[in-house]
Length: 372
Image 1 (cartoon, rainbow, N blue to C red):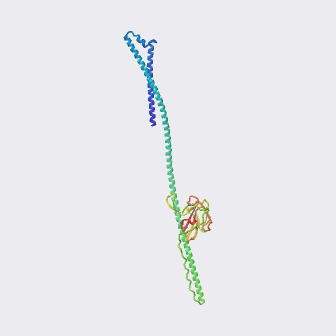
Image 2: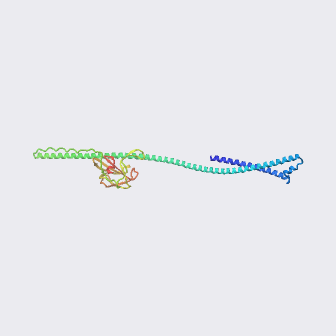
Image 3: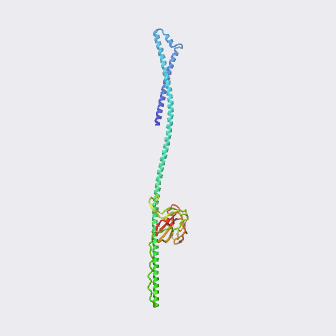
């Protein structure tokens, strides 16, 4: 639209310039004609006038002819003067319009130049936005690649954790079964020994009675077998003290099913996470025997404590991701005894204590057993 207005104004300026030039040429031509007439009158003599021309006629016919010539000359001169005034007025009007049009052309040029600058700036801004969008798309693509890589890594780590958790549970269940079998064998051996001792005592009493000529006493009945109670699979009460040097205890992640932040599916968090710094002292929450103190892959450095049979069930706990431990397998520890220092080993995102409790080899929620 602005370009069209500028072109129209430019065309009008050209037309006015041409009109002014033509009018100027007409003005020059009229002025030349008027000058010629003046020169002709001057050549007729200084005393020659229209009246002289008429009065010099020799007869009436010449008088009329001379009068007509004078009238024609005066009319021609008057017409030329009128045309000259019209041309001059037209020139002034055209020049005024030309001045206005020239100003308008300058204004439109300025507006057009401003629009060109604005258009250039708009193109520059649009290009910047396009470049920004291109960069955002590239960044998004790169982030998708990173997320895909993190997801693949998380899937691998989670599969490793699940496999290690399952292997640990199988191992603990096997240990509990071995301990139960050993305990039952010891109890059976004790019963057999008691029965053998009773039989030996009865035989000795019988022999002594026979030697004394008395009737031997009847043999005592065998002792009743000790009642065997199957494990209940549950323990209750605050059985543990604080396993960390942080008091009061602060749980940062609970036991139970939770949504994995990367994989997007629900999985079991088999313990609770307790807040610690790095290298915070960790303690035995109850008198126990160290089952092992070793590296356990995703668990990092792990200390497994065996509390024996509690409330009819095999009770154990593990402290995980330690920087280092200060105990060894088979060692007896008392409640509150130092066992190691917290850390970030294994599959862990920050220094903390991942604390798990096992009843008959299976994980349970440690919170109530810690009195929380």
